Every structure is written in C-alpha cells, then in structure tokens.
Length: 289
Image (cartoon, rainbow, N blue to C red; front, top):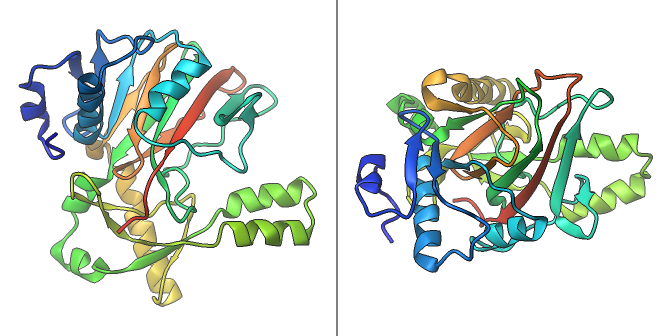
C-alpha cells in the first residue's frame, strides 16, 4: 500500500467507493459503501489509504449497531478506554457525548484527541446518533498544510522542540467531582505529562505537521515562558485559517473518521438548547516523533 498518495493519484485508482472531496486540502466523503458489511482487507486498506490522503473521511446513512461501530474501528488498531469521559453501558471503549439544555457543548476548542497520553490516538471514529436541525457542525484543520506554510525561519526554530501536554481540564473535573488530593495524585502518576514534538512526523506518510493544541499543550520545554506562550499562540492560530479547513454538516447516522496525527478538529457549539448526541471510539496510536 502506498502511504503517501496525492488526492488525484488516489482517486485514479480502482476504488470500492466513490469520493466526494470537501475542500482542496482536507476531508472527503466516501460514498456507496456499507459499513454493516464484512469488508474485505482490500477495501479496509483503501479506507485507510483514504484516511491518510484526506486526513478525515466521512460516511453517510450508516445505521450500524454499537458492535458494528467497534468492529469497524478495531480494523485499524486496538481501542482505548478513556479514563475521564462518560462511557456507554457495557461498552467501555465507547464515549457517549450528549449535549442538551442542561449541558452545553464544550468541545469548541481546536484540538487533537488525547495528546496528554504518552501514546496519543491514531484516530477517532465518531457516529452521530441525534443532531440538531441546524448547527453542531464539526470543523477539521489540516496541520500538515499549516506546517508547510510556516516560514523557513520558524521551521528551523522549531526543529527538535518538545512541548509538554497535560489533561488539565479533566483534572479540574476530578476536583469538581470531589476527588481527594490523594486520588488525583494517583491519576497524575498514571498519566504523567508527556513531551511530544512541536512538529511531529506522521508514521505512515512521513509528512510533518504542527502537533500542539490549545486544549492540552502547556508549554514548549526549555523555552522562556513568554517566548513559549507567543509561539504557541501563533501555532494554535494556524488551525483557524479557512484555507486549511473543511466543515462537515452532520445528519443522523453519519460517521467521521479522522487522523489525530495529521489534523485537529473543532465541534461548533452553536445549537444550544437543542440536543446533540454522538458516540466516539478512539484507536490507540504510537509515540510521536
């Protein structure tokens, strides 16, 4: 399998699905494919190739069960159990994320999933269970394209730089839930702050991309505090540039599969007090380099 094809070369292959691109840089819908079926290895390889090519891929009208959701994601690697997010009963690998009148959406920060882990996620597969009539879109940003457009001076400055990541917001949730300091320290030991490259190299495509995010990155190791803050704010802002983005309008039974090693995402929280219910499964990745 060629792990570094351009979109044009990928689309010129004989594919088991049709491709509808969402933007020149990132995102594509894969059409005429049924994830309920027992997909052969060749089709799974092409789906993964599409993920590498477009960084996030989408499927419509997939009325699948929880077991089928898990089975599909498991084709691409082992699945993680999130230690802080609400889990679906009897399915610990499935995150249930529900927002309504009593619980506003709060995923409206550009981020890559679980970068506070020593081995962050390869990718996430999210299924829309119930969506508002309008609003609640998810935006995705191509952090490889964002890196390519950095000046040579900044690229050189960031070569070899490491950033420290932390699950700080989840720790606040533990405090709010009444966990003792001893219990929180035990969680800190279980999830020590990792140091990841500010610019990571994708293990398959070898493309470099910006790998810091506002949700979980704390500082650049060894840099002056103000210099670190200034650089991080600049790098965070790259995700907000429309030329690096696509935007997905959800429908019930739509599925998104995104590559956390190559893109960031932002769930627009513009639908309150309406209901938005999703279920997410996350594939374990490897240590960034």
